[in-house]
Length: 116
Image 1: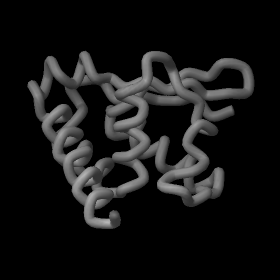
Image 2: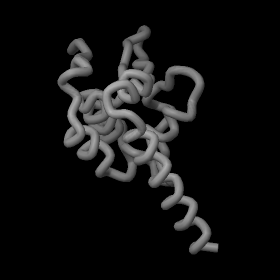
Image 3: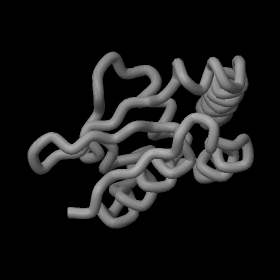
Image 4: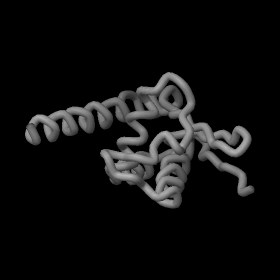
């Protein structure tokens, strides 16, 4: 099995974070992980906004989140458990991540209200 690599906090960039968040599925996955109180398995996100994601697509999303420095992944048997790096990212970027997530959630609520 290929080892999981994570960038050092000094190597995480704003550009990398914004790239990771540029995909609606990835920002939704990250927002859900940030709200979770425990590590999450990739399979918890097989369905995003009612759409089933192929496992290969989901793996790619998690790889991008990990390579950008947003999450930390750990193998536990045949599962990979994922957590956000919120504390580390807050120390480096201040409230940037929270601001992006707040804007995303506000946008999501506005879209839901329009659909009603």
